[in-house]
Length: 502
Image (cartoon, rainbow, N blue to C red):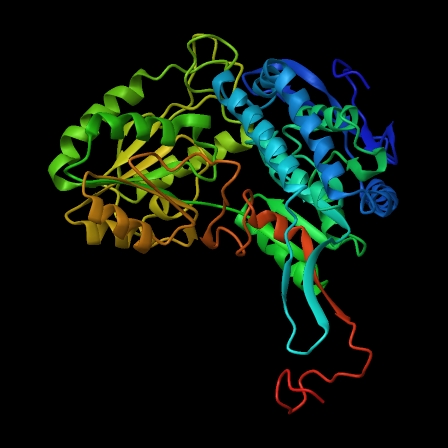
């Protein structure tokens, strides 16, 4: 199916097929809603059921393929992503709005993940340990699990699907993939590249649609593994379902990340960091810096400089040169941000800049919102506690590091945190005491590297991690093997002297 097609299809059972429902939805450019990208399948539970049946056949074939050979296919995927980096970045910016610089980084994350996955095909470590009995061998090894259901968000249209699918595939599982309905074109492009690289067709299934599709995947009894990134509310439903059905589940959900700037910090560096952390991707990251905690000595100077810089940020189409902040992904997202502006003002915070839709100068056809800063925010205010997922920053003033650490930890989320200081002792305290899965020192809260685990604590997730070596343990199961070559019955865990002759 050519990527230029205006009407797209699902990929099920080795073929590009129309949805059984016969229904489609429109996908439009958030920078210019007159720009129709295409019509995509509005699939249903029957489409998912057909995809799962195919994925089960794919799993039977794929699990028998040696892991290094599976890794070689992922290496070829990385090569193709490298060749098409600019094309894919343009496609993603048109589809979800963030700037080309950011979507190129999104593709690069997929490239890095592919090459890392390729090496992991030769590192599916187990353990060999001494047995407590004579002439007996004891070992563990990793085995694939089955069909993995992959449900991904809009904000990283390529990186997050690769974080999930590439490890799942190298471990020997097949995948049923549902991309967010805001970025279906990126999902289709990724699947085409995987097929071109040589992935057996029934190993990957692509089912477009809304939450109806996601729910059908989560509730299907033949999908034993689910990986979900999205809101905490939806993640709670997914967790309840998977717990009841005894499925393995990885959840990556919300964040309310804070950047702490101490009086001794490099203020120029911190200023660059907060602009990138708060307003990059238009604030639509689970790691976005949505709280800024300033020590009193630098509070007024830093805040004045920040407001001036934020007002000067250039909004526009992410594919145009000079654009620094793109649109929000859709009208619902914009309305949600507008609602929090009202909430912040009603609670008594000072609106220093932004707070409204951006219009004029070519912005009228898109979902643009001005970079927004609230000051005099108090701990416990809703704009300080709740994930907004937009270009809104809440600034809190503190006296001491202890107070800053307490405020950082005083939310229900625990994904990322950041501290700007020259005090090495305080930096190490922060890594120990900030209640987050990730802590940056002298860098903003956003960013991830493919070879390190990514994830958070509290209501950000359920303990599993994306990326790095840990995710390969999630997508595989440990099996233990014993080989007794003594020629006699040896009874382990019986009350006798371990290793003594019988």
